[in-house]
Image (cartoon, rainbow, N blue to C red; front, side):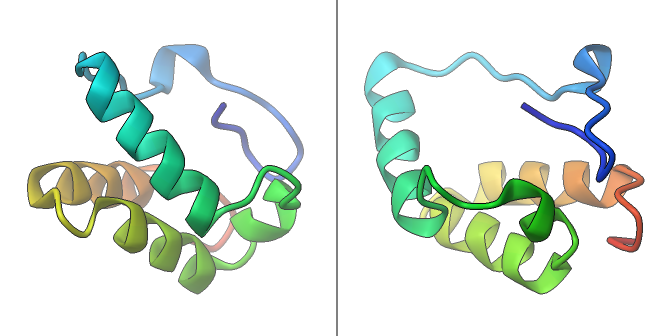
Length: 82
């Protein structure tokens, strides 16, 4: 889920790409290592370096996805991420 620091979600602005089930599982496992389930996401949104580090970790072996994710993050107005 993508949201701003106050919790507003923009469903129409979410990036989505069709991927295989196996690749989804891979990304989920990588994401759980980079950003565990009990992470305070609002704090993460206010820490651009940590957020970008997590994105880089998850997609480091998938340069096309990494570029898309970082470009998408840069396009959002998340209170200081730009």
